[in-house]
Length: 175
Image (cartoon, rainbow, N blue to C red; front, side, top):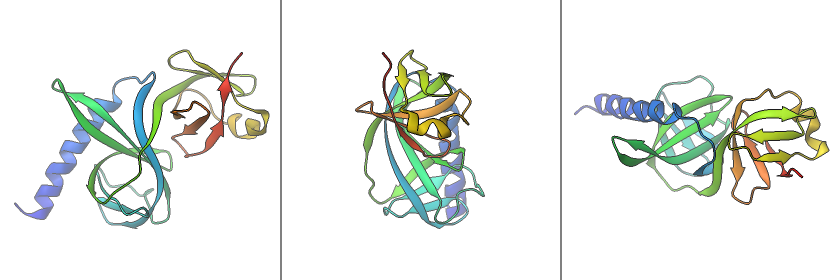
């Protein structure tokens, strides 16, 4: 099999997993993630500064060298079986990817959505009903965000990471 044909087959598989996995609405799903930046890029492969390489399901102009990215990994259900899948978040885009080579860190988090905001964005409600308060020093940032939007809630539940721009803000449970 020629390398371009193999790449096309893998891209179709990764894209299919991406469509299946993103069609469901997340409420509070356990995932692994890591932030990084792109060190090299060709049509369908990005190499990250941490040393791992990933095959993109589709080409994109926003995944450029030096761009900050977030990689989110989770298991998705395909034909009754759990299959590992990953997405690259870069400049507001969500791109299904497949690990090609190299090692990468894993940080535990919960994939969820902010579905409502009150008090100029300082009180947030997540898809599962959890309410969080964001300290006042992040007001300027949260005023510009209109729910719903995808976020990662860190495993210690003290930070939210916006997947659109990678920005991290501290949070605490609402009283």
